[in-house]
Image: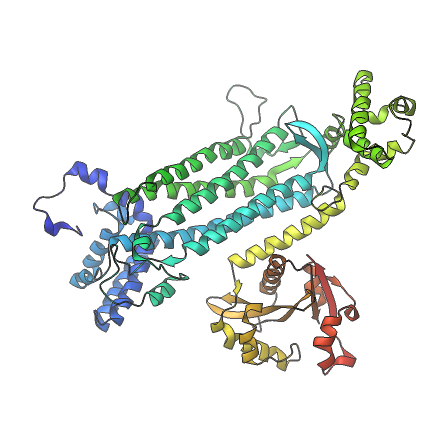
Length: 613
């Protein structure tokens, strides 16, 4: 069914149709086109351009069509329609008759395709966010499995200094966390609805665009109609995020390929993620990681293609924008697939801890420790560096490691070297000295690993049930607090107080209903407390409470808060999240603010816990 044939006297040529039509790839937008159409039907009904009976007929037809594409997503490909929009209208007309011809009143394919693509992007990026978290969790599990294993760290692909395997894995956790943050920020920016902007100048019907945006799950409507129909920044931004994340996966893959090589031999590939050679029986190839490395160029290429597509486009819509989809769809699909296979592959990767530790001890990687030792003897670092280098040269000439040199050999270079130098040159001694924030000292890495696990849980909460509270949530928050206050678990709070402090609250949702809440209260000294934490009765033990706490801890980190406390009758719950028992009397802020006025002040049965972020 052509959507534009009235002005033409002849049908389009087949060659033109083959070049012009987009159904062969934009058919994946079918569920979102139907979703947008359902919202548009309601908007037209509000403007009395559809009767209630027509609204019901259209909605019923669209529901039937949605069921069809959910059952068979490739159903549109059996037609010869120009694009997914014409297919939806054509099929709807077959289902319900001429009423379907009223659906396109006041809208354009320009604002419709922009809406469809944003809806698809929101759904796709949510799935990708889950895959990013799965890859992060796989790296964290790998780090936890080999937390104490030692391996050589490299610069210029030369052995430099020993590091913990867990420290290496956490470096990639940092990269993927930044990718997740970029993805989350991009989702916020793309969550604006173009529907109701028409072809370019706005709809001729005074629809309530804020209501349409809310019904479709957007944060709000696009503000300018010209920009709304021609903007593809979100496509570029997500392809850029995908490209950078693929670079991170590629770097991780390159490390693994090298560490699994015969030259390094630090890591061992499991059979489940390896392939062999058709000629050489001994080969065990890291194809998974090489493919990730190769696909990185493919995704980055889609980004460059999109940038070149839009660089010279005048306002507003141009047919060039049809080129926004194929590379975009493929780029995000490749990113998702690579994240999924990385999460699958990492548990099949083993560290040969003996080989890795031996390699860490080679290459005079303790030369810096020797220089540091000399600094401790009062020698300036530049001189210490030179003296350490001379001793490395002597060790090379003798064919022994630094720690095998005799004390007499060392004292020929510097008389300040004593017997205690050998303890300083020991592998773990040097590792333990790297104790500044971000260093590879085991104690620091252990803390970093715990914090990374907490952040992962907070990110999971942000992707699933938990979000920042809004004013419209106040009645439900007040209801939850009243329920637990009646049981003696919370101090009561008035709705007006909750409204004034709404920025402190987070809520947990289940099937669109608020079922939990919690608040992060910041004292004047910078100490923060998690309070008013509660779930709907019967939902305990499902992880929502942990998600709420981790969401609030993540907010505390962003605010630069170093210490968070909790006063509770469920200390085991908070202990699982990294909190430790604390002395309540050392919280004067809390004691003066709340405890002085608590009816159980002299018979408190709550345990104080705290966590340092």
